[in-house]
Length: 244
Image (tube, rainbow, N blue to C red; front, top):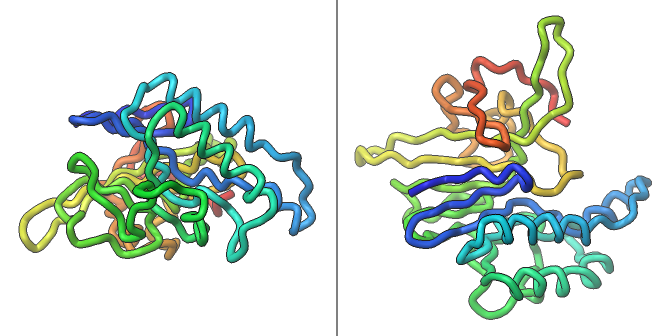
């Protein structure tokens, strides 16, 4: 199995018998959500869609796996989402088959999907790899495998010698769980694709309470990577910020 970090996403290509392109936390419709809080931004769904299509073009996958929070607004589905999601998802389908692991923002997402595209909320094994949004406990069948997880929006802030932090950058966090059986369940937390989604610093993920698997992170041995695959250290050696 090979993992390829797609910097222009950020996205992940998992290559085994199949080539699975993973895009987490699109949060389509986020602009209408921000508008309800007094922040007015023109929809960038078209530009976001083009970025996904560019990742598809770059990687030539067999499957596009949308790792939850395809839509943004909860508990409702906004007019923006009703208007934009059908066309966005069809553009993806026109190039590659799609599958969705539903996230906590994805209530009602099934109405936009074709039969067979919606996976269980507890995650699914595809080509020997587990895929899970991350807000629920995983299906036990994922134990002992690599589990790719969204939901947490991991970021890293590079801090200079005088304590000034640069803009937070998307990051991957890799950790593992030693199971009672002796098997090792590996965890890969992937960053959000949406440019407005914000994030949690990798140094705070374990205490964030965002999902059951984040509590399993070993901060001393976990590995942190930038979106281009550059290894930057462990959560214990990186200076956390309050998040963005």
